[in-house]
Image (tube, rainbow, N blue to C red; front, side, top):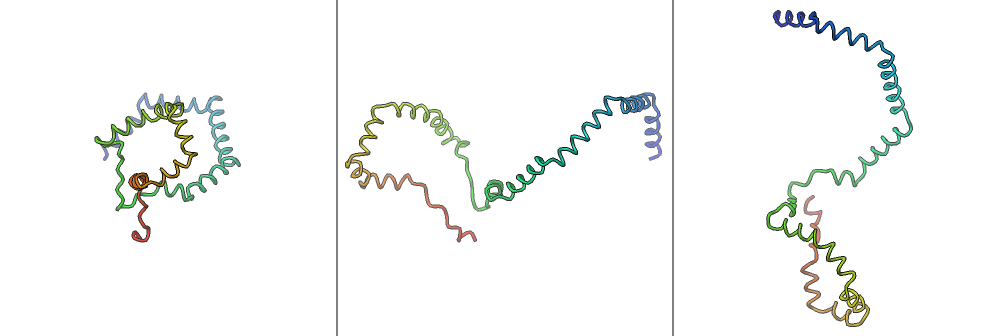
Length: 155
């Protein structure tokens, strides 16, 4: 401990340390540094007391207390497993391909003769018969997302 204090005293008394202290003392007295410090302190006080900053802090408080913010930032339930299919080896490439193809196919569909024929078909009685058919009902049931789980079971 005594050797450590001696080396610290030696470093504090070195020529380099004295030069650094002199430069720091000189800079602290210059007009440029004093003006910069005063400006910085003034801006900090203005920001702390401004109505805009107070309003921003109030809005941030409201947002953090909102249901949507709490819902988005809460920890997931331990019995819920979330798998991002875009990161899997089997489905990920298919989803990436669909992401690239869907905008192009959508543009092509909107200008196609098939789109115009389908829109006209939707206004005819055949469309009502077709949409009520057993095949379309089974297809709709197969592609429908499942019902969310009951919240009563988790409570």
